[in-house]
Length: 273
Ligand SMILES: [Zn+2]
Image (cartoon, rainbow, N blue to C red; front, side, top):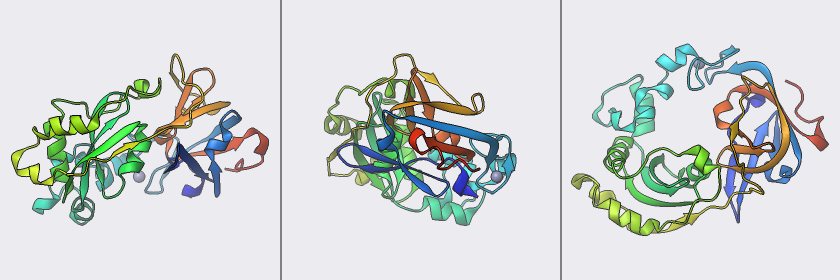
């Protein structure tokens, strides 16, 4: 059933990011569609990760029940500093929370629209950075659980943002920043007991996106308001498709939408709901 829904694009880091959209059993190599016309058509149905179908989500891509009961939508998902599984304290489902939280996490600095601090689980780092549209990134610390990464993030939030300004991110390539120097300066502010987790490696990852033209005055288009979105694909950055007419479409915020996706020359593909 999730075969027919929009999901975030798979990303691979090469000279530029390679994007693949998997829908209706077809892997669309999105980079090949740049300069061509694409079409996304919503069926009017969304499907929650629990399998429930509806005509709209309650909040954050979840049905009412999941938003209030699923560990995937708990408070600590949005605020890692509230994680308590390392103390054996349950939020919604201790077993799930232990599996998720008691694993190596990384704190990183990324430059997508100015410097931000973020956290990521296991080896997801580069994927996370590509999803956020970061142009440069560096790992700052490796910690044994999610809570510690949340604590470091909170301590650094006083100096740098913890969110991506997506409008700025989509308006062009940010000015290059000396992330090694930023890391050194910010490391001073990591809580004493967590300083042992700061990584000595200072490798900076540089990421280039397949964009031929950035929008001038960004118009965000959504399937709830416009069930059929079509136009020429001018580029891809983060999880956004950049379309003609200064339009941007966030694939990620449409995860779970049952939709048809097609490219003009192959309109027969993926048209069945
Ligand atoms: Zn649900």
